View (tube, rainbow, N blue to C red):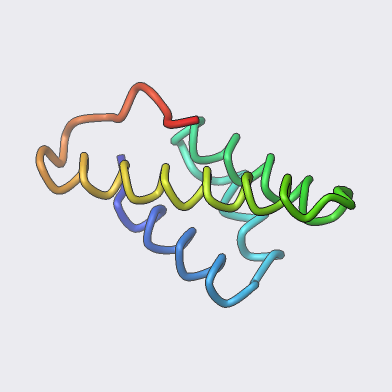
Length: 84
């Protein structure tokens, strides 16, 4: 998988660039990353319970960390599971 996608997701999340994060969600080939971004953005815009938003944010950040580690060990390996 393209490690740049994970770096971008982390950067956009850190900088609160939600429009760019949405574009990345659509363009990335990593469906797990796309789903984590979707869940986070949905919670950010529609959830009133902050603990749910926090949970979705941490799930996204954990997946980005996991995918970066997997990409470092074997650049041809595609992470086939997600952390929930």
